[in-house]
Image 1 (cartoon, rainbow, N blue to C red):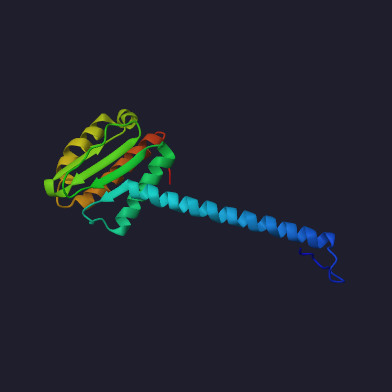
Image 2 (tube, rainbow, N blue to C red):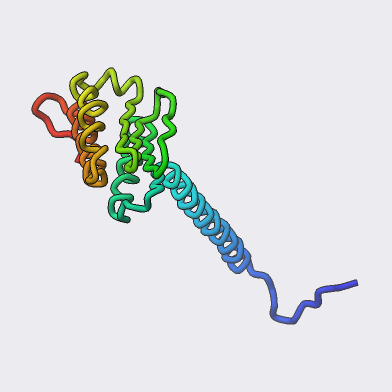
Amino acid sequence: MFRRVRVPGEEESPLRSFVRSVGVVIVFVCVGILFWKNYESTLEKIVSRQTIYDGTKTLSPSQKRLLKQFARYVRDVYGFDFKVTISKKHLILPQESKKLLYIGICPPQRRAVVIFPIILKRALPANFVKYMQGPFANKKLSSEDWPIALMEAVQLIYNQLEKMETPSGGQGHK
């Protein structure tokens, strides 16, 4: 049916064929890299939505960003998941897990909980775990200043994790 007609002087040189082939490969590689970056970005958005649930819409974007960074740090360095739930009505507590570090806050009921993964609970000093789950959760996280206390809780946990990493007298992650 269709037949390609060659125009005089349109000879396919080996260099031209090579350049065309390299161009096609470059396009495929670029598309692959862009697809991969888009996939990573989408996955990060999905994971970050699961990390923080603020039913009160109280946390600022910078506070949410810090919580997401902490979640990424805990996941990448220790393999634990980190979840924060702030609810207007009630807390639905997750089961104690090997991998979940959980902070739950219900400001209207003045109730808060901190749940450490089983392994982390054993690795951290017992008095720190008791303090975070008892006095800190019951007084600071349950107060009206709970957003500040939440950031303080994350900082305290981060500091304890750094102490575990640090050989006596040395420097931890920076």
